Image 1 (cartoon, rainbow, N blue to C red):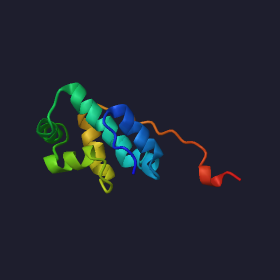
Image 2: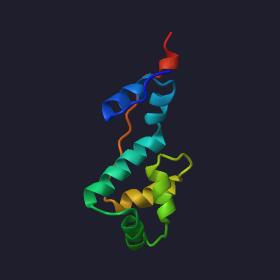
Image 3: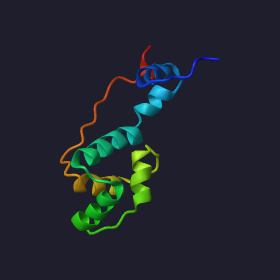
Length: 106
């Protein structure tokens, strides 16, 4: 059995060696999680403050549970929900980068 990671560097190395983990960490929900979480922290807001700001900015309600699901990288969040949160956080553009699909290589 492998030694359990005891610090961030060891954890990241462990993740890199875990099958399918890189794929998950690069998934859309996790990438959105990173953007939204980082911006919320940058603004100094709690999840509840973000919920209040979404209502103020967009006129629509979302729950703290939804923010928690987003920040947990949970799949199944609607594009409409992402749009409301991103608009509230002041994001103008989200850029997607494409690369050659490794399974297409011959």
